[in-house]
Length: 102
Image 1 (spheres, helix red, strand yellow):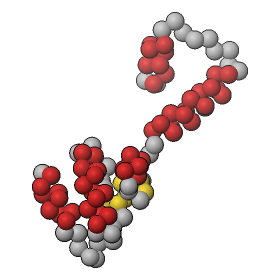
Image 2 (image 1 turned 60 degrees about the vertical axis):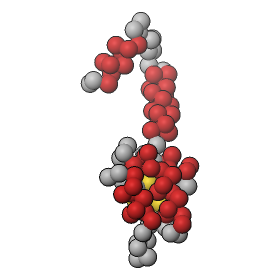
Image 3 (image 1 turned 30 degrees about the horizontal axis):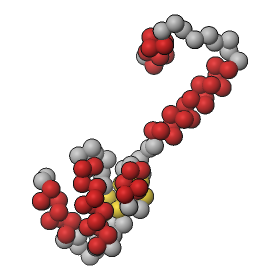
Image 4 (image 1 turned 180 degrees about the vertical axis):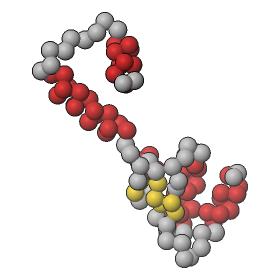
C-alpha cells in the first residue's frame, strides 16, 4: 500500500464501520498521524497496537508495554538475587547471555 491508497481509504470510512483497528506492524507506524486525523474526522475511535498511538490520539492500545515489563523483571531479579549470596561476574555480557540462553 502507498500513502495515497491509505489516505483514499481513510477519507472514505463507511458509516457502518465502528472503529479503526491498527494491526501490529512497524509499517503502519509511519502513518500514525493520518490514521488519527482521518478517523477523528469520521468520528471513529482508533484501536492500536502500541502506547505511542494512544499518545498521538488513539482511544486504546492492545499490545504490551515492554518498558513496564522490564521494570517488573528487574524487581523480580532483585528479589531473587538479594539473599542468594550472588556476586556479580567479571563479564556481565557472558552472564546475561548464559542466563537468557538456558
